[in-house]
Image 1 (cartoon, rainbow, N blue to C red):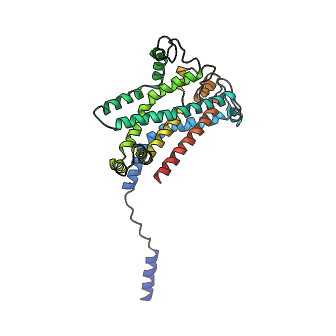
Image 2 (image 1 turned 45 degrees about the vertical axis):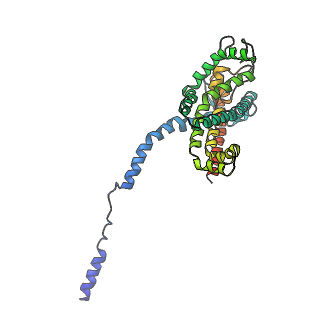
Length: 316
């Protein structure tokens, strides 16, 4: 009896363990994962081909002496060292910063005023909103050519208007000096871009509860204090977004100066992107142009990081 029991126990111990019961391979979780990957793959392919690969290629070219024709050779960081000693590049950076410091507050003030004007409501609010937004749909090149015609001495309406106001003569060349050329470009940019910033700021104003402003007025706060201590803090995320967009667009300014001033007079209105264009496609120094592009991209990345910092502080 004992032997039989021991033999049965031994045979039982030698028996293979039962296989765990497995569910279907394509579970709901895996199905959702595969569906998400399938939906993301086209966008990922586009980003890889048109952004990641050119970005890597730009950095690789910046480390070489890369002429348009002929052999390229590795020179390390010489292009970056050259950039810090290049007077034309430093002048372009300085002019770009000056343009950014001028156009950014002007755009913000004009867009904020238009947003408040439209936000007040009324039957004509939607009409004015559409009118202010119309220049946004025009391309920068088309807008630049339009203002180039308007400012033509002796022909354009701006010359006639300036003559009637006594500002300048009818035959005044607005592009004869860098100051007047920059002023005209700034006017064109404000006319072209203020409508977009107005829409962004208007969306921020509309998200502020009406009860908050009414409570401030009941507590005795005037319009200025209500704007300063109630509207601006609640509008801070939108303001940060608008400012970062404006600064990034100003640092990348090219079309308006290329068409309206052609960098003149005496290369006085050459922006950073304009200088990169001249270096790469006029002087055919592709390696050096790639190095300048990489340096400008670092500046834009710093601006984006500043945007995230401002938004994070606002959320806290």
